[in-house]
Length: 199
Image 1 (cartoon, one colour):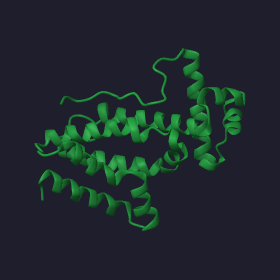
Image 2 (image 1 turned 90 degrees about the vertical axis):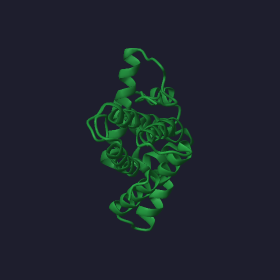
Image 3 (image 1 turned 120 degrees about the horizontal axis):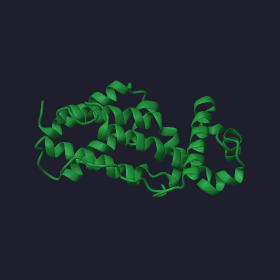
Image 4 (image 1 turned 30 degrees about the vertical axis):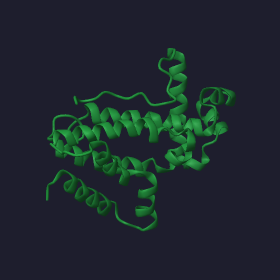
């Protein structure tokens, strides 16, 4: 398998007029600023419209619902993260040995999931991280496992490595059980080394 390209995330229009793209970006920036300054619970369609200087109807027409807005913001951040995996600096991006890339991927994905956990939950059923984004991460992990010479059922092995990075598991371990993030990551590295066959 060769190095991959960005996978379009569901809910994203294939092409937009320039003015529509500008409006969309302005609404997403306004939403992100509200989250950064006031928390995700403060984000309403009214608040986003006011922050962006548009009518509330514009926000509803563009995103359909609050969940749709959250999903669009999640897609936006996910696309940026994918770009860092595909063309960013090593070790997350190309140019590092596959084991270094896999370990960097795990750390980055863990931190990204924790950072966006409230957003992922707020996106609800409209969220696409579990669909298109999972396809990207699964493909990337399978690619790196192949590069490492791992044999066996690679799709299932990749799924086993991705499962600990999902919101419900990280929420339980970090927020409920109080595990330090480094402990969670170290446990994941141990799992990777067992799958790859390195001690």
